[in-house]
Image (cartoon, rainbow, N blue to C red; front, side, top):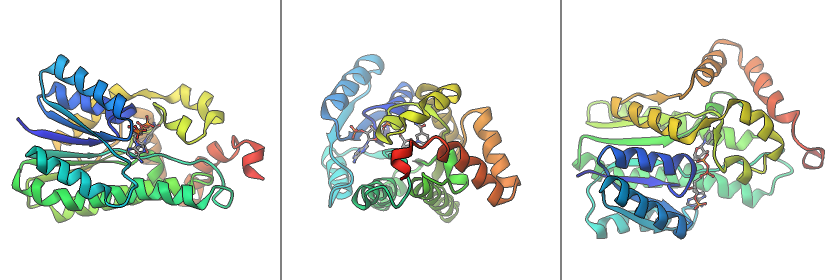
Amino acid sequence: MPYALITGASKGIGYAIAHELASRGNHILAVARSSELLEKLCIELEQKYGVEAKALAIDLTGEGAASAVFNWCADLNAPVTILVNNAGYGLWGRFEDLSLPEQQNMLRLNMGSLVSLTHLFLPLLRENEPSYILNVSGVIAHQPVATMSLYAASKSFVLSFSRGLRRELRDTKVKVSCLSPGPTATDFTKRARMEAMEALAEKFNMTAKKVAKMAVNGMYKGKAEIVPGGLNVLSVLLAKLVPTSLAEKFASDLYEKRLPKESGE
Ligand SMILES: NC(=O)c1ccc[n+]([C@@H]2O[C@H](COP(=O)([O-])OP(=O)(O)OC[C@H]3O[C@@H](n4cnc5c(N)ncnc54)[C@H](OP(=O)(O)O)[C@@H]3O)[C@@H](O)[C@H]2O)c1
């Protein structure tokens, strides 16, 4: 049976992707920081789907973390055929007001860890073809957004990198897909300290379960980019059709106007 490695599997979209992939007969290798949540997930997956599920609790922003994940999989002798780079978070606020170390940590997770894991696992994925890489970006990748400048840029990086890599690998049986969700009901807003955005997000939120199902369907079909939900598809389309200055003003207004005064001064 194939093995799927999922980062950020302890909750939210990664947790739902773990369930979705296990329900389709994949053994699961679950990675995140919260060991208790991961252990609980593994028990659920083993009981519900009869697959093997193993957990590694690790902070992926730490020095050598990607190598530690790779060595863990090697020690388990697990033939990984699916790599889901999902772990990530956002920070809301003006660039100059947010702490630099915090922002750098976000970049290490959203970009650095994803790149390292992809580079380390690619030879194994080539050996185990057909295989899949699913990188998690967001609809925010499609235009710059004031007060989410670095987060949006990190997700543009994920989208661009995924599409470039996909093209490099087009003659192999390693399919690279990028998932670009819009607002999804998870702990994302809490970690990004976006309580003031929650009322708006709730109007548009999709469930992580629905996003995961569409993500896994798209991944198996080898889609370049998976944008779950009609409204999100429309927003991506509009961002491509209208002048960049207009798309970035529209998206920025949504966030900038709701930023609590004390974070903006
Ligand atoms: N929710 C949305 O509206 C939305 C929209 C677009 C894109 N996304 C993207 O979707 C992905 C998943 O986010 P989510 O919405 O599911 O948020 P979430 O519920 O906060 O889940 C984030 C996951 O990443 C893990 N994680 C965070 N920091 C980590 C670290 N340093 N090392 C290892 N694991 C870490 C978390 O586990 P631990 O805390 O246990 O480490 C958790 O499993 C992210 O890349 C996010 O940018 C989310």
